Image 1 (tube, rainbow, N blue to C red):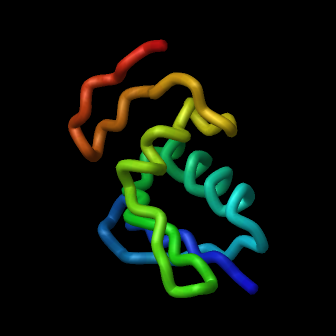
Image 2 (image 1 turned 180 degrees about the horizontal axis):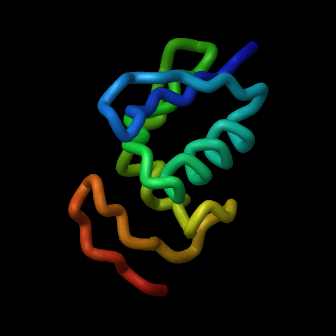
Length: 82
């Protein structure tokens, strides 16, 4: 069972990376966010999705699990520090 992280490259091309577990997929998504990629969602093996707002809650400059948010230049959101 594979999880797929859907994101856009800096040039706008849509890409996907695979992970073997939910935690691993969230970790990869956080790493991509820290590299200023536009992470869209995670596709679960059962057909459900983890959408960007939930991923933003986990984001902490690429560390997992996240307790703080770093600036996300693509979304334009203001960082909130815990």
